[in-house]
Image (cartoon, rainbow, N blue to C red; front, side, top):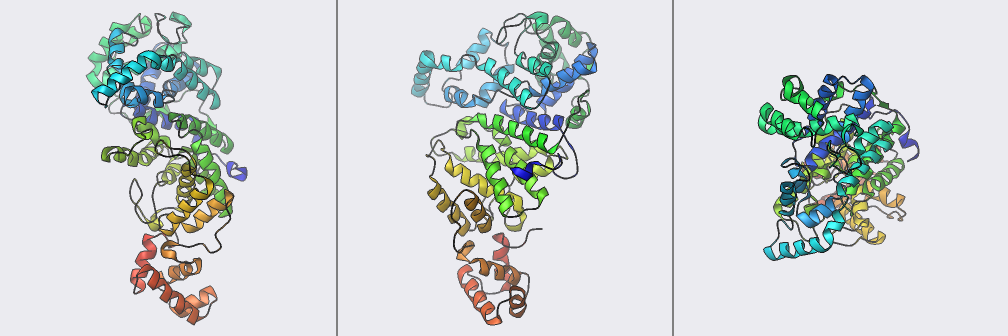
Length: 525
């Protein structure tokens, strides 16, 4: 990336704190578990309140804070296998809170999902395959989740105490947790607090204080540390009160103890890259996708001479553009056949989910504003909002083009990877059809080693000079004024205008201006 990773740690003028990035990621974890957004944030608040009543100091509460935000961050890493066996990885994970972990009822609930959504014969076949080989594929799944979460904590530069607590977050007081290496007080206190807070949050949200107290009492001494469970049972109001009325994001960011890490530009890019790689683990078809898109987009930004701030924001948006994928089941992402209407609606939502995850942070919101447009198209045919033309920012056009090219070069469940030549032809066809910016398309292809088109064509087959003329014509300039501006003769200008009208089916400046607007040919704001 060169110079693009230098500069301040913000995408405007607001410093980026590590807590904001991790909290934003936690919103995607919520969606991946079929929970409402801010479930993890609320469990973080509960864990901090418990920690304070337990008498932990500021440094220890800082460990609790980051453990609470990262506890389930590795659980999407084998979503491909979860969907393969159980039909919908999000539905599977959402049942985590229905029964005691590892109990016969929990196992029966899980096995009941084998082959879900398929015919009876297919479910029988899946069940048989699972009995023969599938269980080996899933053995150690929870341990891997904990290890991956600890690995991300390491990549984010968090202390060893956080990594140890996150890696122990599925252990249980009675020693029957995962990986089953610790029990009782040998489990870090942060892990014990967070596990209690996680389950109590769900019980309280679904059934109120009584349900939370009942859960803590029933599982004290087995799943939960008895002394911590007793804090909930003895006086639940200070621990659970006000959760429904609090501005959860602001409360969690404001409650960060001790560390309060502000990221430099390089640190922010490294953290975003670590998050991107973890998110792309969700499907074998997207491994390394975001980091490659960011690399292509960054080099294209340099070729297009984007201002430094736009280029930095573009690079960071490219790294996080897939965060919203966490909220869509792998039963959809990894489906080899055509998607149904409902499935397509879920796919069309994922850029919006990315924006939702980032928009509460003033420092991350500008990145989200670019990332949300990576599937928009200049003719309005994209998603999630169907915006067109100048409403799509210049950085977003670069991201859209880089992402489209890289996606073509990767295999997908319904097709093999396209070779470089075929991808280039497809990308240029998108520009000719008016969906992608022709200049950006050529920049992306050049940085990827393709020879630039001798005469890049715009929508409707317009030449680059005709696009220049159309822009000025749409702005109300006369033939003579256009000629002066472009240093060509008035006669040549009139010839260009005649050709433009024929190519785009326009008959006057107004209809030509509308065409230019719809196809993103006007200068952006």
